[in-house]
Length: 216
Figure (cartoon, rainbow, N blue to C red):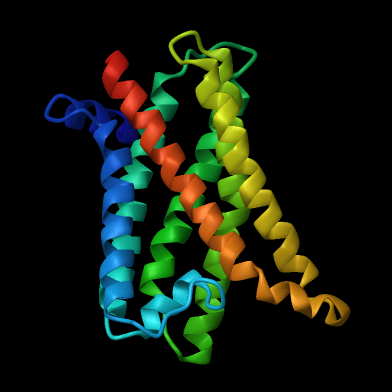
């Protein structure tokens, strides 16, 4: 962790590292838009987000995910460094950071492993589930840390719980749809996934924007 902190500190001397949160959503959104424009048959209501990688612009979707995950990885580590460390929250900071790193790496794998091959689909699905579950964990824990830290507005943390709820709903519905009698839930999963995606985009926009404004 010391090497990571040293790298981020050196990087922060060149460019505000909080910008990497914005770079993350920018690269992801651009990849999604280009992939969507090149895939006119895509239906938000009926197709999962990752279906975009199967279209003509799939490479842009994949690259968007990869760069988004890399930028997010840098940002969440910097965010961790900004919290006041004391006996009450040190374990929470470490736990949140571990979950955040694994979730971001899993998100990178979403772009690396995306295609029609059954093995690739399995790896993609596993990476997606890990990023959802640990995404819920780290965003929830970071929300608590934000509320506890006087440098941040408590409203940022309160809003963050909406993102946590979106992740929780997506995870619950995903597991419920595995039961034969609840397969109909599959019909609403794509929409819930897009809502979750939009919620995460807002979180990655508001937090770094606030950090830049307050020079954190």
